[in-house]
Length: 174
Image 1 (cartoon, rainbow, N blue to C red):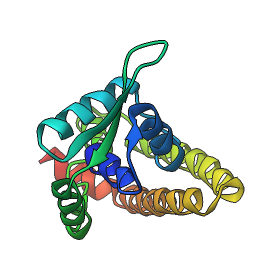
Image 2: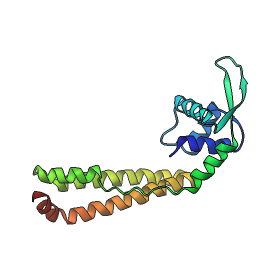
Image 3: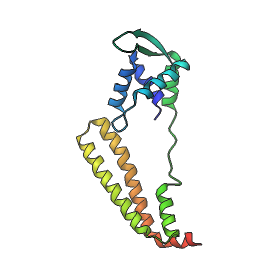
Image 4: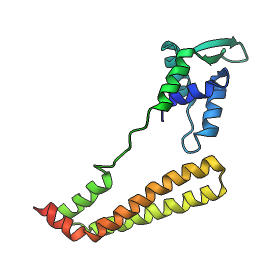
């Protein structure tokens, strides 16, 4: 996820302080990984330097000055371009799990045990996500569905690999 573009998009509804941007980000997108304040302010500094935001006002308070940021026309154009650009699909052509299976076979360890352990971990995560989906709002349900579909695909791969383990052992031994 592009944090800069996400913060710019949040600014389209109106100027906000860094604290407000962090809170809005965490509420909408940061359930599993909330932003750190330093990340918000370093991102805003970069966006300011690049002319995508401007300081809309500064308020003095009990602590440091609070800057209120507003998106610029260039920032709006940048968000529009980012939204219109499709994300590259993420094929896992060299996954860590595949590497572990091959290394287990090469070192005469039990690759089936690795697959079983991984299957159990995937199923555990699927139960957690299914429970979260059941209790969540629509946004959380969609995020959980995305993760669940990926985990289901991984499970299919685990089953396929388990079924072909003998052939893979022969292939890697050559």
